Image (cartoon, rainbow, N blue to C red; front, top):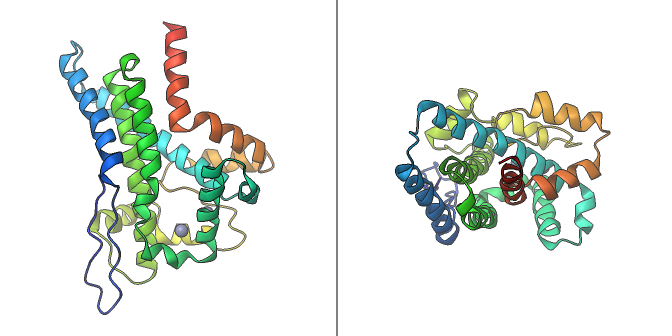
Length: 245
Ligand SMILES: [Zn+2]
Ligand SMILES: [Zn+2]
């Protein structure tokens, strides 16, 4: 996926570590993508431009929502005491990043989405007998957009520290497709109460206003995190479709 070479020449600076998703999660994601492509190939329905717009639009908007919600939830201090170890350890990572943002530049930050790519792809494969080609491609693209958001976060911090980033990220930020380093820097300025987004979508017009309107409800965030994450959301979508069929 967004496997990018990090070792760019940076005039005397320490080279940036390479950013990549490991082969096992990528293999499961690839298997799901292949299933989607073959299913589409064998389907009598054509893959039209509107199908493409649907797949790209739904996957992008949903990933924007998921990354915002995940980040806002994991930044909550309540989760440092969570009984769910994945939540506790990732909350420690997210909140540790506020304390020392520059540490991100010495890690394979993109690799932190490995478990998610694996979990969402395995769930997509398990439910594959009941889902359309378009749904499979949406699940694959959720991991892809998640990778773009994660890598942009890494390169945003790199740019803040005077590194060059690949053109995809510098131009993406310049043209307004990706959150800029400046925008994210506000998130790192106390009291950290804004800009939880990793993509440019609905955070400023829907998610953050609604969150503040609920008095920054922890329970609301937790309910969304445990039911609408990309693994559970797939089960809900398949269940709902079968009820409506
Ligand atoms: Zn944060
Ligand atoms: Zn950051």
